[in-house]
Length: 228
Image 1 (cartoon, rainbow, N blue to C red):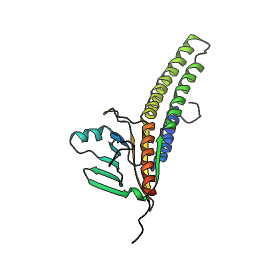
Image 2 (image 1 turned 180 degrees about the vertical axis):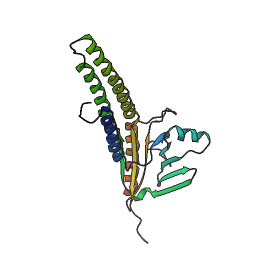
Image 3 (image 1 turned 90 degrees about the vertical axis):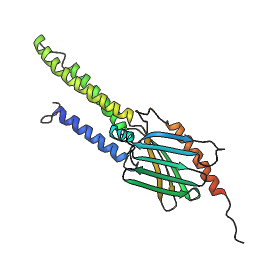
């Protein structure tokens, strides 16, 4: 339509695919896409487990599986002594562990599909621009014909733009991870659960990581016992 030999549909499809690949690349190391089911964080005076995060696989199918006890869940637990990451599902479970004294680094990041937001605005802008540019016409008949075509494009752009915006709005994810000696990474990536209506904002996640960092630092600051 606006490029000879290439339809607007093909360009829109290419743009959606390009953004999807770009966002997939950004999340390549974030782990499974989880929705939050439980988030507990203590205080400096909390003894034992002071951070617990539980998430399940996202999607309607994954939610339906929870009704039959077949959900795939991942949990991250941090205590005064250890960090544990557990994945449980119908196919079995995996369990990873690292002593808190062996943790060399921690990480907290916040992700949003910004490319989807840009694409949403581009669809809205193109739909409006296409409508305005088809309004001038020499006759009423030509104007009606052009506006009818522009209206169809406008509706398509509104739908695609809204889909991309919803994609952006629901894409918010928080990643919390630690690195133990030997470059072993234990972490969990989660986002808001629409069905359970449970969300944790970045500020609270940073507070959790700050608490974990203080505990890690305190563990490393304990002087080693000298041999007899």
